[in-house]
Length: 324
View (tube, rainbow, N blue to C red):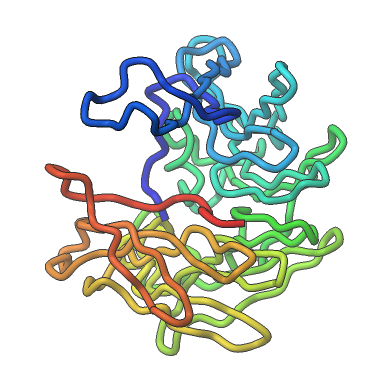
């Protein structure tokens, strides 16, 4: 899982409505070869100085997080039809849509802080995706539809997280149980497990972790019900050794997607309806837990392939589905 979310720029949407002869093309380009022309729109904020659009559905809804005035909080936001909509929170300071949301029926999955302080002092996974310092408030996954934000259940613990969502109303995520896990690193205390929420309110299904791994998380789900995610140790509930294994769950079976040679940060982020998985995975030499990951693409026939980096760059990651 990512440790930070980029909020240094205002969210933008990029459309490719046409092709043609773009002005200022490289001189080596053939004169008769059409090139794509792009239109970039500044989506704006909720009064702050930065925002981030993290996903888009077939309805043209761009979704992410936007800072409020003074940059004292960030709220889950939808940009659609020339408007921006603040989705609010579950009573706390922050919320966000941080992962792929593929639902085209008007449902949105995300994370939001509640008004309740965590009695164990946990900062939980959510804090890495918000613009403020950890508030130590409980954070839950949510589903938003028709103007109503509904919290998602946990496995008995205080925190939960909603990541990817499909068109069947199922949400991939992770949730705490009541086990005080000795593999956790402060301020994390409770064990967390990969789950699928729904379809339907209040439904939660726990998925198995890789043998020997106490903790895990589901990050995305496609319309066929294929789920991808991670498992490992508790650590701090975000990335690193929590992502020792990249996994795919289907019809009760679990597949280890492998790695690019590292022992941490092996994270599938998205799976499309053809079963193609993208994400990021560490290279050898990460035994200290410091990330050195490259973007990858995984298919059943070819396994995990390193997508490398741009010249001069050290790391890369693939964050969203590339094929419908």
